[in-house]
Length: 172
Image (tube, rainbow, N blue to C red):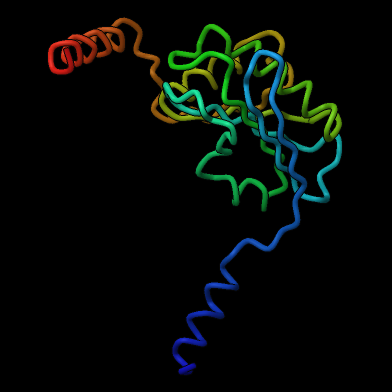
């Protein structure tokens, strides 16, 4: 192997995350799949990120993503938990129940978390805001990270209706 290739390979190995982690997965009685990851040294009272995925019609989310910041959050000492939600598509109607169930699973798997940070983008951003405002979570939420949440009220619905009408015409 040439020295330059060896140098590049060693840089890649150094850049890869090297933390040990605990992983828990499963499926709830309502059909939602869930995933929890935490650094090995995570203890009860440490912070938790509740990741909310965006809009998705796919029923086969058997391994929910922990989001684009997973490696960074784990390296910073956060546990991360995510659910596929028991409702496909516009999951706002079951999201609180699904997150409440997910938080119970975190308690069973790791112990009682300290501060909670709901995080998501698009529909996930809206759900992160919804979780942060809900009385079951509000006392533990110390911040929320909502990226481009679908929180513009009727303007969001106008765009959704336009998209649906265009889909109906094109894909009759």
